[in-house]
Structures are given as structure tokens and as C-alpha cells.
Image (cartoon, rainbow, N blue to C red; front, side, top):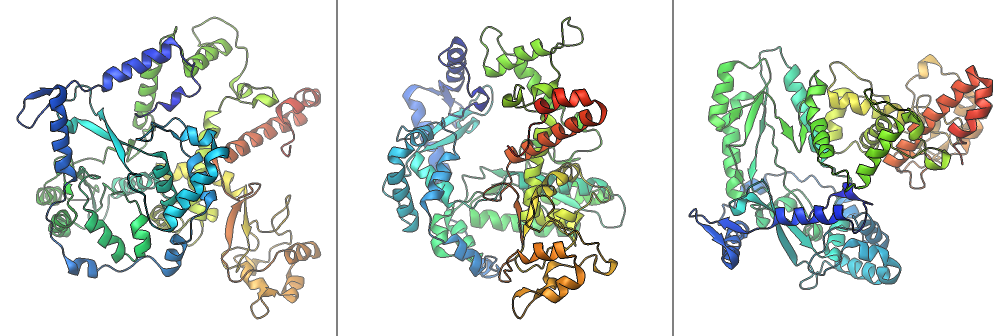
Length: 593
């Protein structure tokens, strides 16, 4: 069953734990279910009702096969991309996939959870890795390896029909590791949220012009259950995926589609009907809606909504649990988060505290509310200092949020190909990279938030020179110098946007020393000549200080906190010489240690 990971490190074998587990077991127990005739069924007879329901969902239906449709699709996957997908799997990937899983995930038919394999990896690791690599590289699965248990979790407080329960698949750990290893990495569900938010922001600010715009939000009935595998397989092949990869690929179906141009409403309706016939999926028009830009006339809105059979909405509301549009009143847009936290805290039993409850009690000790009497023992910034430096290691919320935003900023900088990166680049930095992006006119809330982490990311990256075509000589940090990775030579006005490729001799595929000596001071020339030239590769960004060159939230949080500690240390140097001696070593340890 689904875990509550906020209970991590809670007291083991306590009344709190057992009462919580008993409550969840009682809540999730199925005592009776209503059949299609409206009759309540109890006991063993419920099995037939549940099995019949899922047989109807998972059974293939006779669908229309449109060969012309698949032949009209232009392949998108290149030969180089297929070559990368077909690269043989390695044992190191298996271990990385396993250790990225929560140890206490509910077990499948094998009765094991990931924690078992992680704990005994030195014993079973070699055998498990070789087994999984052999299965993946040979595109073969042993019988019953992917057998899966399904447990039903109530969707609402008082479920009645089988459809009121959410099926949770519990598969074998080995199969889950195989699926994670074969899955395309660097794809985040937050990409969909960011795109939806940007579309909502555009519709809200579009107030002028003769052409109105609209976005259609579709709710697919049983989106993940009604997809025909024959349709999915043909679609993957039409897109250009290699047949060997198609056999391994695990895909999920998006539930959101966008449409523009009012006069195409009838075409959109027919396209959706054709899609339903070929894929087996069904659009739930009762839950779907459409929203328009403010300059769309009322009669056009009503006509389009009537043709599509959906209702009009001011905005998309929540999408994947987050508001799809955030206006000026941000406090109201995110007030539901505070309400949920307050509700959770209010339900805690003080006598049966989890780790989170203990921290709350500890917080009341260190600093009380305005109405309570007592001593404010420590300020929040002192409590957020790491334990080894004299603090309590609490997370400083703003710094942690900035570090998480840095993850998305890092993806914008290093991965310009995904759709979300393409959308934001076209909107905010069409001719530059994220490194040189600015806020722009009328930015969305999401862009403002991501750009807040730009200094964090750009201050910690370096550029590894390949062909030099995307690296600016004076604006980007590309020299192998820990303290000064930028060019020291004064920039000539005529070379403001010059790139590193201009410093190379394309015939000898080395640095052009005549150009270097003409432009740069001697120190810069020596530092440039230490860098190897790789014309066959593109320039790439890497996170300085990480062995793999990859940014992580942990690295970002550490960078933010060290910068704040450095600023505090600098304050003591400037204003209080005695304070520098007294507090400097405590508050700001050597960042290099």
C-alpha cells in the first residue's frame, strides 16, 4: 500500500505507529461493493463483481485501424537517438535504479521490498545485476517475473462502486528495477505543469487583437486502462523508434491536450473521435473544459464550447495537484497548502508523536509565539546551520526552495530539447541560452520563480569546450581555473558576442596561437592553451565540484547556505573585529573542507 514518507524515522513499535496503521487498515478495508444493478454485494461474491469490472477494462475492443493515419506521421526519432537507446545495459545502471527506490515500498508477489536488496546488495548484487542485464539486452522476460498484485485504495470517503477505488499495482522488485532501467530518463511530470501554467498565463494576459485564443483541457476516462497496445506499438514505430526498443519501452498517456484557433473546433472534435476509435480511449466530456483569452468574443466562446460539448471555465483550476494559473494574489492561490498543513498538525496526538511532532514541540521550546511567554533561545538562521558546525541542521525553507528551483533551471540550461525547455526558450530567451536569459515583459509566476535560481546555477557551472560554437569568450566561465574561470583581458567592443570557435584553427583542429597572442594577455593565453580542443563534440555545461558534473538539490542547498554564511562572516569582519574572532570560525567554516 502507499506509504506516508513523512513518517520516516518515526518511533518504532509505538502506540502511535500501531494506531495509525490500524486506522489505515480499517479505512482501506472493502466490506461491501455495489454492482451494476445497484445491489450491495458482500463476502466472497465481491470477487466476481471486481473481476468482471476489470475484465471489461482490460479486454481489447474491436477498433478502427487507419493505415493512412500512421503512414502520414513523420518520424521524429533520429538514428543517433536510437543508437543511444539501444546501447547495451550495464550493471552500474541496475544498482543506480535499485538504490533510487524507497526501501520500504510495498512488496509484490515475491514478498520482498527494495530495502532487502539494498541491504544485502554485497551478497545478491552480482547475481541480480547480471540477471537483469541479460533480460534487458536479450529482450526476454522469464515467465511470471512480471506478475503483479493489485490492491484497491478508496478514492473517496465512502466508496460504493468498484470505480470508486484506485488500483495500485504491486510488482516484483526485480521487474520494477528492469522497468526503471529501461525507462527514458530526464523526463519529469513537472514539465507538464510548467507548460500548462505558461499556457494559462498567456491566455490571461492576451487582451488585445482580433483573434482570440483558447485552450482545451481534456479528461480521459480511465486514461491508463483503455489504451490499446496495438495502437501504441504502431504509433511508436511510426515515430521512428527501433523495433527492439519498442519491445522494452514503458509509456504512459498524457491526459491534457491543447487546441487553438476557434474555427477549427469541428476539426478538433472529429480528431478526438478518430483518436477514440483507434486507441480505445474515451474522452470524458463532462469533466473536460475550455478556457479562452480575454479578447475572445462571447458568441465565439459559446459556439466552440457547444461544438466540443464541454463547459467554459475561467482557468484550468488545478492540474496534477497544482494551480495551472497564478495571478497577482499568490497568497490566495497557494492558501490550500497552508490549510492542509494546519489540518495535519491539528490532528496530531501530543501523547503519540512522530518525528515531525517532536520537531514541532522542539520548535516551541526554541522560540515561542508572540502570545506565549518565554525565552527565544535561538534564532532560526542559527538552527539551520549544519550540526557539525554547531547548529541543529534544520532546513532553511527559502534556501531549500531555491535549490529545488535550481533543478529546473539546470534542466533549462543543459537540456534545451524537451518540450518544456522549447516553450520557455521561445517565450523568454529565443536567441540566447538560459545562462543569458532575463526576466522579460509580463513574465509568468513560474518563470519568475525559476529565474530566481539563475544566479545559483550560473555561479556554480563551468563550460566544457567542444567545438566552441555556443560559448561566449567573455561572458561564459570556460577556463580551467578554480578561482577565475573567466577571461581577464579587457573585452574589445567589436568582440562583445564573439564565441570560442573563432579562436580555433579549423584546419589543424587546435588553438590559433596567433589570434590568442593578438587579443589576450599572457596569463589568459597560458590558461587557454591548457584546454584540449574537441571539434567533434558540442560544448556542454557541467556543475563544478561534482564528480559527475551533475547538479543536485543537495549541492544547491549547500551552495546557498555557504553563501549566506559567508555574507554573515563578511559582516563581522566589516563591523566587529572582536565578533569576527568570536563568531567567524563558528558561523563560516572553510568552504573547501
